[in-house]
Length: 130
Image 1 (spheres, rainbow, N blue to C red):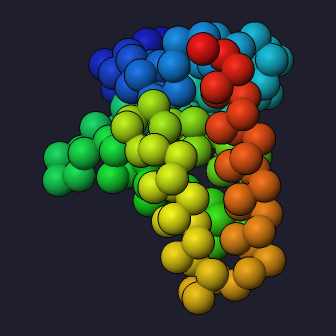
Image 2 (tube, rainbow, N blue to C red; image 1 turned 120 degrees about the vertical axis):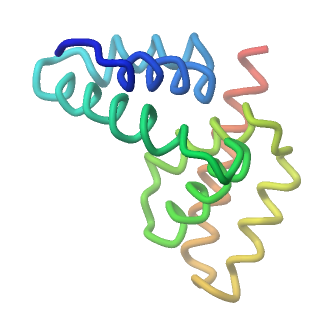
């Protein structure tokens, strides 16, 4: 894929959100074959390069929106990625767990329980990386 300005911008935003080491790890594992590379290229250009760079919301707020969306849709692998992004944007473990707890009354206990289990694992992994 030719590297458009949105692709370049998206690559930079993605690395900032995920952290350089985690972004590199995903590139070498998830996006290491042609089929997934096409998906990754599209996501960099359209989602990170165009959507995440829009004016009106900061990246910290956008990251929290993704955490809430993933939880309400039971998208556990994506939730792990977005929790990492949210932590990298300044949300604390306590704030994120409280945001998830707030969903108990809106999405239900089973979804929140799973989300908290994912959060527990992601937070432990991130603390171990430091």
